[in-house]
Image (cartoon, rainbow over all chains, first blue to last red; front, side, top):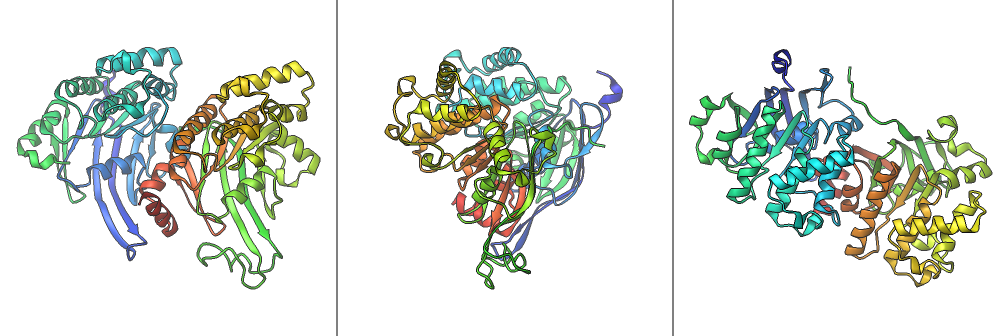
Length: 257
Length: 284
């Protein structure tokens, strides 16, 4: 990997603000993000810390365009090294980037009745331009690493436990690593052993140059995965720095969901 | 400049409108979402849809949501040619290179184009199927309309389509009236795919089916849209259907498009007052 590219951020967020106008509740405006600015470089894992309601998930959603940003810019570097403002590009352009260059893994698996575990993971790979054979091979590899045994591969995802769903979700989200990965409490439902495999898998991504922006609800995961920490409070960034500087300042209560 | 590659539009709809009754000056201003009605009080005319614009690419499904009477089925039927439009321009990239407005074709050309390129799956199978005819016969109908003449070829094609849509082959020669609701819908989907359409219009395809049956039909539709790279429009008042099948959608209210959004954004961050009401009602 060339060092020249490594210094250019994959994500450059400038003055991002998100307000919600609630037309049916006396038209009041609620602001979830105030002038948020930060960057994430290739191979950086930026953890978002802050108490419930600090704006962590709002920030992930505003970047992914599940929320439409109200103002500010979200510059994203494409694989051809050009940059686009995710806050401004068209809906079809967002659809084209999602799942391919920008991944999003949340606590919940989107409902897809009658789709088998392996099928779901393979489809995730195919949607990123892999052929079915490669997607199958890599999908099986990730499922094995996340302790989803063969006996579950042809089972419909709707019957899985919460922890199994979460691991299938991670396997599907990571099958062909995107350039930017947004993680919203991806290991919250996992038992210690499975959590360990998931954390291991996520930590390898940063070594592959993926830019990761993540919300975790425990300091241990942050300590093991993050290279940078951004601390949020009431929709604002109140601290941003390398993990060794910020981590000692945090208490378990600062990362509660 | 942006280097994001997006698929070319297969269907382009611009300025589409349908008015029932006399069209008079000011009818558009006197109706719509902001007025709260589609009915022009001066003339009694109904502006069922007006100024509808969107594009759909191959392999993409666009959702149209809104309450009953909002104009969503009207839009679908205008595109299908089931009803005449009052205004607008509808083009298919796969028909005469997108150089012809489908709305101004003569009836015979329009019918031929529809048989070759556009299929509709209706909420009520009785609208899309002849219930007194066998499943095989219902599929043979669009095939013969498209010029198929070989009996064995038609049978083989029908068998293949019924298999894909998971209709037991031993029911192929039974009349559709003897089928359950879910199975009728599968036959309707099989028929819709008969001539390899480029555009499929789905009007409340799972409304009226039991939840488990609906889930199976939805999964089938989703798989077929992906497999055949179809451009599709899905009309539904059910957000779970829209969520499962589409990435983008439009919201209609009193005949007008009031919001145009990514599907997850519409559900999580609806902007228009009517969209907010619709989403919160669906979530309650």
